[in-house]
Amino acid sequence: MRSGRLTSRQSPDFHRVISLRQILRISSFYTPTPKNSIAIRCALGPKLREYAEKAGVLVDNTNRELQALDSIPLQTWRSRADGFTEYLNKRWLDYTGMTLDQALGWQWLAAIHPDDLPALSDTWGKVLTSGKPGEAEARMRRFDGVYRWFLFRAEPFQDESGAVAGWYGTNTDIEDRKHAEQKLRDSELNLRQMTETIPEMLWSATPDGAIDYCNTRLLDYTGFSAEEVKGDNWTKLLHPDDISRAVQVWLSCVTTGAPYRVEVRTIHAADRTYRWCVTNALPLLDQEGRILKWHGTVVDMHDWKQAQEDLRNTQAELAHITRVMTMGELAASIAHEVNQPLASIVTNGETGLRWLARSAPDIEKVQELTKRMVADARRASEIIDRIRAIVTGRKAQLVRLSLGDIIEESMTFLKHEFQSRGISVSLDLATDLPQIVGDRTQLQQVIVNLAVNAMQAMAHAGRRNIHVRTTLLASETVCCAIDDSGPGVDSAAFPRLFDSFFTTKEAGMGMGLPISRSIIEAHGGRIRVENNSTLGGARFSFELPANGAG
Ligand SMILES: Nc1ncnc2c1ncn2[C@@H]1O[C@H](COP(=O)(O)OP(=O)(O)OP(=O)(O)O)[C@@H](O)[C@H]1O
Ligand SMILES: [Mg+2]
Image (cartoon, rainbow, N blue to C red; front, side, top):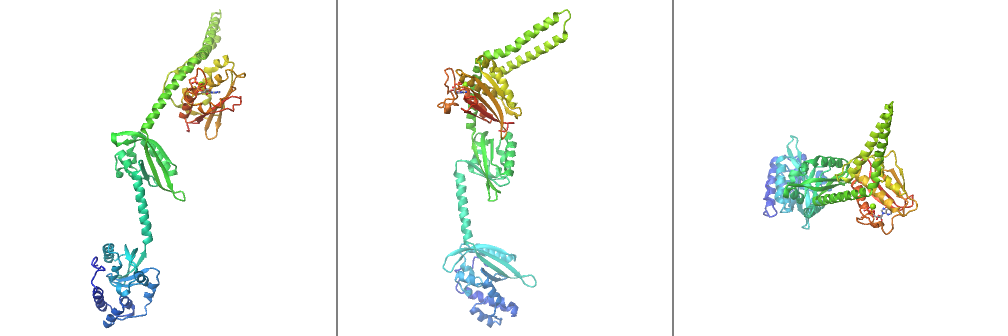
């Protein structure tokens, strides 16, 4: 095909020259029978028909195939095997405003936008050589000079021997689609520009969880190229100890469509260290709820996390100091607690000696007394162990615990104090509570803080009762409520109760409640106060997730 040479700037004789050559070829190749007359006739305008008739070619005016092409609601055309266009239907002519004579052969190319002509000619040439269906897009001039985008499609048809005998083609107006595509491209460009200029680290993934995009900020941060982290290779960015956890969460989110959130150490190229980052992602869903895409962010929170850690350490130290102070205040009570088993050891020891001093020593009796002495010594030692745990500032140790046990143990330290102040304590501990995961000493500190507050609040009360109750709330949450029969919390004090250093007591430090709150929250729970105690005073209650579920 002579692509590129057939432009609207061809000489005015071009049409005639081509046509004459065609006529000669037609007359030499075709035997004028009714069957092939159509191909010949299609190629002819009125003037060429004259030549054709002169050349002895049969010209048939009753042409059903032409009518058929004209009635198709689409621009259609037909070419010879070598690409010479023999016919263009009425729709094509109406659109371009050209006559058939002006368009036949290669002349129709004059309607193609000059910028699109080389590519279209080239494609058409390749299609002709291949003998296979083909298509191309180009702008075509309308009768009023306006160009619109068209999709050109060509389909070969064969003769009896199976050789390509010619081509049928359609031109579909795709101007609207092109506009929509352009709009989409513009908005994609806009979005891409936004994701590249936004001061955040962004990424996206396919529905099955393969990373398909990371913005420059994320790549600069990690020092990897887009190619290096695509697909499943994103794990390279993480600290080796965090990979399996992140992958596990990610796979589960990709399966369920749940929002993804992990705190992981991510490589930081600038100083070749790992920094704590929080990575979040949400799925984009279609109308049926299917995941179309994942969009995610990575936020460096290393400094924040460090500050949190420092704060936690400071709080822990403070909690330790206040614990030691509380223990100091409760010294008398604790001494009494330890004294009890010691006194009983002494009594049992003396009795045992007496039984042994008899003329017939009662060995059985002495054995029993010795067993009691061992049990009492164990009790005293346990109490001392607990006190040591409380006053030595060691790191939190998370273990499975029974909330009821912790309450009973805490009461040991307070029992004597309560007795000496005429306070009666009733425990209502649910027997079927699930276990919690937590630090024994810290949780004891919360209960002691709340109980001491209750005790102090009732200093001038007529009735002095404390009621401790545990319950299982729905959704695997255990709850402990401590009620007192004091005056309740002063309404002006309510909003500031948990603030550090807020106290209404002369010797108070105002740290009991804030420390209790930070402990409970660190255990995934919450603490609150109400003035609706069944005993008439305040009710402090806290909730903790059962089985470490929070
Ligand atoms: N059971 C209660 N009834 C009434 N008011 C209470 C009760 N518990 C706490 N409060 C109020 O809350 C304030 C803060 O309590 P918090 O335990 O934080 O500090 P504190 O008891 O004053 O001092 P400390 O640091 O020694 O515990 C108390 O000063 C008191 O006014
Ligand atoms: Mg207090």
